Image (tube, rainbow, N blue to C red; front, side, top):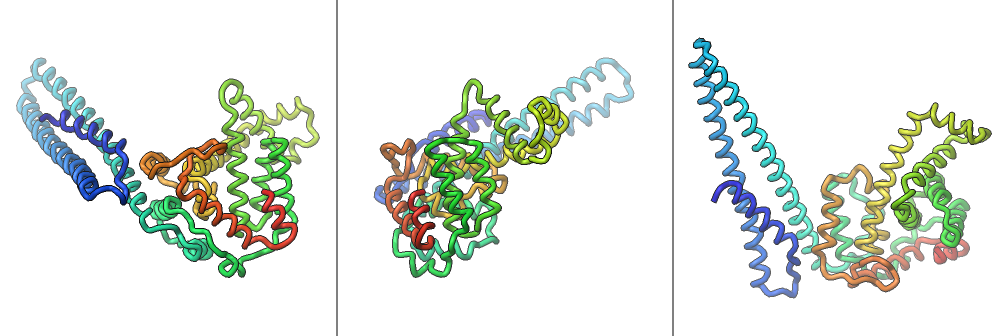
Length: 387
C-alpha cells in the first residue's frame, strides 16, 4: 500500500470513528473492547504514517545530495545542457517540498481532530462519577483554582456540566456569602423585565455593559443574572440575519459609539454627527473591533447554553469574559464533538433547543435553590424570582 493510500485509509477510518456513538456503562465488555481496538488501530496507523513520512524525507534528502553532487560535477563545463538540467532539478525539488508541506498540514489537522475526539471521550467517561454535590460546587465558587491552564479549566468545567448538579439545601453553605443588592441591581432586573415585554436591543446591550462596572459582579448570583441577560442580548443580536442585517448592525454600532462619547456628539445635528464620524474613523474602527471580540464571547456562551442548558448558568466558568480570547483554538470543536457524542438528548417542548434531559430538571432545581439562598429577603428576592 502506498503512502497516499495509507493516508486516505486513515482519514476514512477516523471519519467513521468520529460518527460512531461512544459506549456507555450499560454496554457489554465486548463492545467496549472493540472500541479500544478501534482507537488503538487509529493510533497505530497514525504512527505508521509518521514513520513513512520520515522515510520519505530521508529519501528526499539523499536525492537532494545526489543532485547537488551532480551539479557540482557539471560546473565548469559551461554547457547549456547542464544549466537546463540544473534548473529542472531545482524545480522538481521545489515541487516535492510543496507536496510534503501539504501532507504535513493534513496530517496535523487529522491528529488535532483525533485529540479532540479522545478529549471528549474522556470527559464523557467522567459522567459515571455521578452528580456534582452542592459542597463541591460551592467550594469551586468560593475558591477558584487560578493556577489551572486553559485546557484544564475547560475540561473541569465541561466534565461537571456533563455530570449535572445535585439539588439540595444551600442555606448552611452560602449563608456567609449572602449580600444585599444595591439599588442599581434592582433597577437592572426591572429594566430587563420591561425589555422582555418591549424589546429594545440597544437598551438591553447598554444595560448589560454598564451593569458590569456598577454592580457587585463578584457576587455569584449577580454573575448568574448577567449570564442570563447576556444570552438574551446575544440571541436578539443573532436574530438579525439576511438582507439588511449588515446595515442594521453598522447603525447599531454607530449609535453605541456615539452614546459612549456623549460630550462629542450630544449637541450635534445629524449632518454634523456624520462629519464627526468621518473624523473619528480610526477610533470607531477600534471600537468595532472591541465589539467583535465581545460578540464572539457572547456567542460562545449562547452555544454552550444551547448545547448544555441550565448547567451553564450554574458553573462559574461559563461567563462571556471567560469565553473570549482566553480559550484555545479547539474549544469550539470540543463543544461540537461533545454535543454529537454525549448521551442521548431530547428537545424540551417549547424551549426551542436541545438539552441533556437526564440532568436538566435537577440542574434547574439546584439553580433555584442556590439563587434563593443567596438572595436577601424582601424586594431583592421578589425581583430575582420574577426574573
